[in-house]
Length: 262
Ligand code: PGA
Image 1 (cartoon, rainbow, N blue to C red):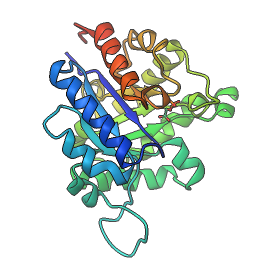
Image 2: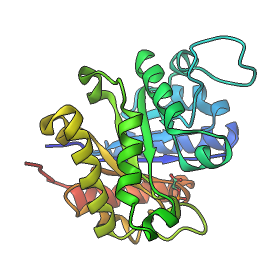
Image 3: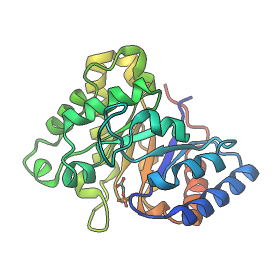
């Protein structure tokens, strides 16, 4: 039986007050309804410690949306993996397309950050995904394969079990995004798993959680999760309100109940 994942990144939304009230309501719900899927939330840095504290007794993993690759030093305004770890973060999102587009993140910096995160015992949640133009030219798979290979470069075999990948096609994310179809997602997840299998062997690749993100909502979540190669969903807008997230949790639990992998 393989774990199903469901998480949300809040991007630059929710100050500490809103984050705390979200976390409290979620903790209250989960105390009544222990989740059958692995949940995670990624608040802004400023709310991380408080949210992690509120959810400490819960099975929800709390993480950050970015980090710096150095463990310490003269990097004004940056946050390191050890600082995140001390705050109560269990995971860290790396390489989101908004970081790549607006903040100069590259496959190479993502790789350095993956290694630094693992060093600090954080789970890297690595986002990959092709821009629209690459899909139009028929090279989406090549693009994503490259991203995966560079992100995992030098990650030791024993550490692979601490890595999560998320396929987030750039054209599917945000207000102007069009959700990828279950077939498109399933195909690309196959490409990603195949790429990981080339490096680490198919057994370890099979264990790796590969999530889909990009305009996931209550209407398309079920059809995505009924595809065999999709291990979970990474949600933005549709989970920014705690009531929506709770509804999504219930929905995902319903459609994945008894899901067994061979
Ligand atoms: P969205 O964001 O669900 O609002 O499209 C997804 C993401 O950026 O991870």
